[in-house]
Image (cartoon, rainbow, N blue to C red; front, top):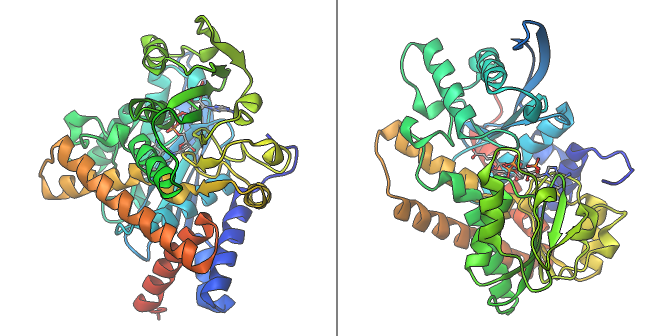
Length: 421
Ligand SMILES: NC(=O)C1=CN([C@@H]2O[C@H](COP(=O)(O)OP(=O)(O)OC[C@H]3O[C@@H](n4cnc5c(N)ncnc54)[C@H](OP(=O)(O)O)[C@@H]3O)[C@@H](O)[C@H]2O)C=CC1
Ligand SMILES: O=C(O)CCC(=O)C(=O)O
């Protein structure tokens, strides 16, 4: 982490300003998309297992509903704060726009370390939080989903709490649910699958062969572990992976199925405890600086910043996390000739399959996993091609290209709806 004060929302504003200038917009043409439409902050009292009461700070931010209901995950992490949730909500708006699904953007979070809470405490926290944000969520208003520190079980509790408040079952209020509650086949792997599809697309576009090409993945949670698994299955040599405890490195390529088995064997199994011949333990900083063709940051924001960008030796970066690269780092990477596929495109697979889940819920139908994966690939391929083409045409980075498409779609929708009254 850089020592500089980092504000992710400033990153968003600066990226949007850059795209708006190329689009020839005056400030008033797009000023409205620089602010979230609605922010809700809640104080959530929870009865802990020892009988004491703790109050947790929670947020739900709706950045935009111009193109459809707000959509985006809920994060449980000790570093959650208002600017982070605002940025994550805005990234959702532009993500949904770049892949052209009919949503705006939202995000939520609770300041807590879920690893220190019992399952019962997590359940009580989730239920109370859901009741407190219930007035602004719903299948036609704002649809939460998993993000860092949350999962299908948490989504199931949200769905149940909301349904109890409404007096009937409302599966479409949340996506990423357990399959038994109307979750979509393919959703749990969708973000990592989208990262894999996008990684192969960018390597092909750069005429880099896939088989045997090296990759490094930071973060082995939902997104990182599926990305590593699918890139490995595609024939790539995964040199390094990491979690919060540090990284593993093997110059001949890691045995990814073995590492996944180790992680999944017990809740809380950290990579620092993994031992295998020829596998070295390294820090997350060292992992990011490994010499590799592909680097996939899949953990948190601001991992590649002005203090380490110059030491990044990857040829291609595919942003699986939201906001892993700061604005200053972006410029350094561009000067070094590193090709970077931005988060709003690279990790959109999750929200695309969330959209499929919501479509199935509100129509009471069910799609096969094969159909889900085919539709996901079609959308990811089309979005990649559109971003690649506009970046070539306008001679911009892929990030700016993605924002040229996304900002225009959001601004057009806003203008077509007109300013009221
Ligand atoms: N889940 C989804 O569908 C989507 C997620 N994203 C984004 O992807 C990223 C990862 O999310 P997700 O996989 O869901 O979250 P998880 O909570 O499942 O996993 C997060 C991973 O990051 C690791 N991690 C945390 N802090 C650090 C650190 N400082 N250095 C290295 N690794 C670290 C965690 O390690 P440990 O387990 O040891 O704590 C864990 O392996 C986030 O940016 C999220 O917003 C984007 C689109 C959709
Ligand atoms: O699946 C979703 O609705 C959103 C997932 C998410 O939070 C993200 O893409 O960052």
